[in-house]
Image 1 (cartoon, rainbow, N blue to C red):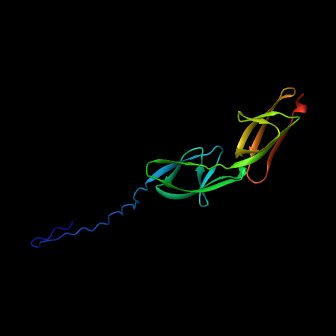
Image 2 (image 1 turned 60 degrees about the horizontal axis):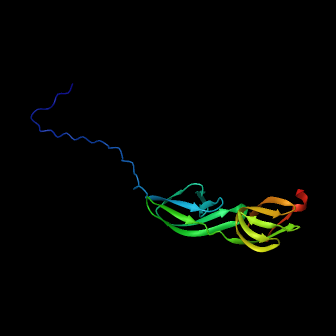
Image 3 (image 1 turned 180 degrees about the horizontal axis):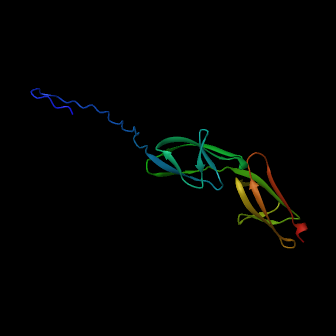
Amino acid sequence: PAQPEHGRAGVVALLAEAPMAAVVPAAVATGALRVQAPFDVQVFEGERLLGTNAAPVSLPAGTHTLTLVNTALGFSQTFSTRVAARKTATLAADVPLVPVQLNALPWAEVTVDGRALGETPLANVPLPLGTHRVMFRHPEFGEQVESLTVRTGGPVRLVADLRRTR
């Protein structure tokens, strides 16, 4: 074994490479966005699908331009909204009203989603996009319930033939 040299002041240098610390970005402050709509919508930022209105969407804090989409109903709306860190913001869809024509043979009293509208024929009844429960009632021919899906683009008409229910 080697013996230390006497009489010489020795300097021992030890060089060791320390492992590099992982570069971790500062935590990105996030918040959430809850979207309110009477029907299912997908939430997009640009081309990226973030989620739906079924659950809050997590987003980095800041201002975002989001598009709400329901292709089946022909619905698309773009909003600019601000999300604060550790907070939940709410965005309510602005659902358009579409004119609907309701008629029955021979005639009927009409209720839509439990709200009485009067007797047929009914023209230009403003209903929001989505699915509605329409009840036609005639004193002699009884009741007929229909499901009506209101979409954008084009007239929406529903005619019930109560004479067939007897």
